[in-house]
Structures are given as structure tokens and as C-alpha cells.
Length: 242
Image 1: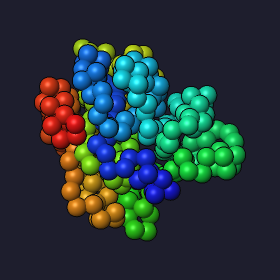
Image 2: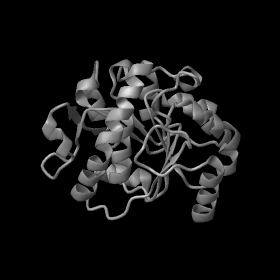
Image 3: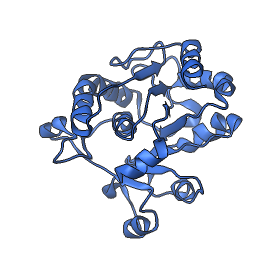
Image 4: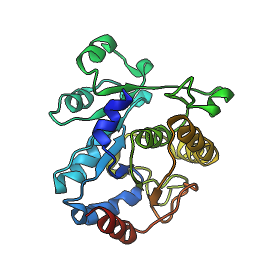
């Protein structure tokens, strides 16, 4: 199933679109990325990003992660996504399925990639050769980021990865279904503490030698990655991938 992920990402740069309020800036910049061969990825209500942003450059989301309870897997949007002609990947867990798990596994064997999570201390050492798709349970971003690296992303850029205290900005972009302000802050703290170890585990398990992860949210509360302005991020993408 990891081979299928590689076949979708194909060593391209991956832009992960997240619902922090700062992603609204991408609305006015997205046309500058038209024509660049970028793989777009998102979580949960991914169709919001397609309609509000990616529709302006006729690009779809190609990698989706949805496993949270509020996602109600599989909903109508999930099924429509899996039925698209273009290759794509749907990352989820078997326990997230509320119905028809076996049917979906049989119908979409090349598109579904399953992972497992728990809160056990030992899971902080995962993924590992023994448990290559197991993760410590936390925010979807951590698992999605891990998978796009496993899938061979040349560079990963995070858009809308604001995290932390969003009280003055609003919690989520375009009415995205989400968690409370407290939960966002909690998830950000866990991410900041665990991500360095998680990336080490990913690199060791999958023999990844180099990482390039950039956060296009200058005021982000996510600490592990260098932050870029939109102007600098777009300049970087054009210079490297045009």
C-alpha cells in the first residue's frame, strides 16, 4: 500500500493545506502556483480547500487523511473522492469506519492506506520496522506529514498550519468542522513535543536521508519547522519546480 502512495506523490513537492485562518492568504496567491506540478494534500473537510482555493487552478487534493470521529468515515465526500478517475490516496484507520469496511477495502484496494494509533508510551517509538504504519495518537497533521514523507515527497510545505491560540483570528477557515480552542492548543503542544522523535522514527524506518519541511505561516505556533512568508514560499517553489 505504500507503493500506491509513492505512485501518487511521485517525488513531487507536497503542499499540505490546513484550516488555520492564515490559509486565507493562499486564496490571493494560488494562481501564482498554476502550472507547477505540486501534489496537494489535506485532512478532514478537504473539499473546502478544493472549492475555495484549488478550483482556481483546476487542481484536486490527491492525498487525504480522515480518521477523526467527526469525519464520519465513510461519508458522501469520501466516496466521491475514492471514485475519481485520477489516482489518489485516502489515509484512514479501520476502526474509523462506521460502515461497509470490507466493501470499501475490496472496492478501493489501491486507494486506501490504513494506519493505527494509540496513546501508549511505547508508540512514541513508532513507526518502526515492526509497526511501520503505527503512530502515537495525536493531531491529523502529524500522521499526514509522516505519510507524505514516507511516500517520497521532495519538499513539504505547510499552509494554514497556525496552531495554538486562534481566539483573535477565528478557529477555522470557511466553517471547517473542528475542535475547540483548548483542543487546538493541546494538539499543538503535543505536536511540538513529539514531532522531532516522530521524524527520526520515520527516517530510520523508511531510510529517508533528507527532509525539507517548510511552514508557510510566519506566526505559527508549530515550532519544529522553519517559517516562510507566502512571497518567499512561492519564490522558492517557482525557482525549484517551474
